[in-house]
Image (cartoon, rainbow, N blue to C red; front, top):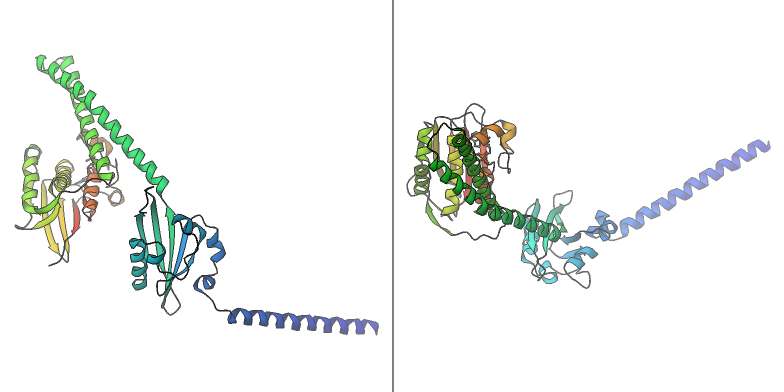
Length: 380
Ligand code: ADP
């Protein structure tokens, strides 16, 4: 009998406990639903943002700041969180203001590097993404600001070092070349051992000269502080100049050169730098290509596409993705043998990017390669 009483008491205790917890859970759920949820609360990440080393900014659908973490305030030297202000009111940086506007219209991820207008030359990388609700309505945007200043300084130091070393190497190298040429002139027996050795020294010092010139050109282009001397360039004439300069080399290798660029096609560009890029591509076509190298160009849909194609062995698909990297060569030994430095295509890429364009290659193994430089052109 007492066993039954204990069992009944235990059961009623459990039922009471269950009902009590159910009520508490309902109240909790109701309380949360009743609380007005801001954008960052809804995301439930405010606490995490507070402790991040990167600056975080959240704007709502009207572009008004809803949240800025302490790192953001520190980066922009703000005394308090600029909640309720627009980006222009809070930090007065046009680039960020434009990103906010862009994300209000587009559902995309944006990335931009900006320099703060202070005396410390501070660089930031901004990554932004639009926030959409389940019905694809714009709810605002989140931005993360990374401080790139230290990285940029190191990068500048590296570039300066490379440029200085290359520059310092130039003088002794030209002296060595001068002596070798004099010795070669006085050596009449072309079959003698000393003549052969001198010829080798001459070849290698020439290679070293090309390498130094390419490194200098590249570090100059990479430094970003070169001014472009842009004006209307007749693309056909420019291509003709490049082909003329390389005709002797092409004749020696029995390569036919063709200029298929239409008359009167112009591009607003720095002609010397564009010449350099086109020259590298045509020279590669002669060195690595087949029997014909052709330059052509089209202008459509606000883009000018400058193309250099050859009918040589082509480039393997896995190499196409890496071909514009510094010192990347498909066949190292062959490139060296032909006097290549492995920097030609990097220079092409940088020159194109400086003009706001892109460089790419299309190739099928055994069926040649076509290099395309695409430049934006204002539509008329
Ligand atoms: P390099 O000084 O070695 O020519 P580049 O940067 O100009 O350096 O070219 C990188 C590599 O790309 C070359 O070593 C070569 O293997 C390959 N390459 C470039 N152009 C062509 C081409 N037209 N056909 C086949 N391979 C090419």
